[in-house]
Picture 1 (tube, rainbow, N blue to C red):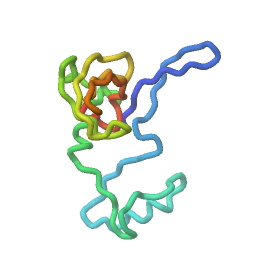
Picture 2 (cartoon, rainbow, N blue to C red; picture 1 turned 120 degrees about the horizontal axis):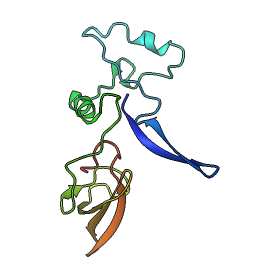
Picture 3 (cartoon, helix red, strand yellow; picture 1 turned 180 degrees about the vertical axis):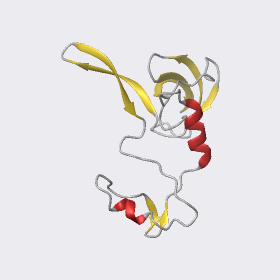
Picture 4 (tube, rainbow, N blue to C red; picture 1 turned 90 degrees about the vertical axis):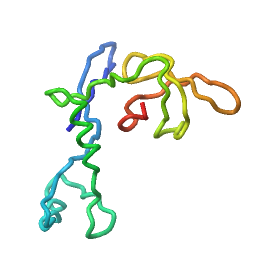
Length: 138
């Protein structure tokens, strides 16, 4: 379960806490036969397994799992991207600016990056989350 550090402000106090990247989700690998996966749905605390059809589980690409593991430290805390720098060209893969191309202007504190996006005939500065889902091509 990959985690990320977040800052919590409450009653004039600031503290850092760890939160899951995918809250409420558990990734599981089933054997070749997939014979017993329906038993998981009957387990206390499990809402349901994500599936495309009644008898077909939704697979998560192994490349995504591997890249998440590579980005985590020994305590499963997701490390910041190290290949981003000012001037790098990126493509936003999710959110309000999905499919927009831009250039990294500044890496901000926390999980944000300031991008220069080109749209409507001009360049616009936008702050965007780096963890939106896993690499907004960022």
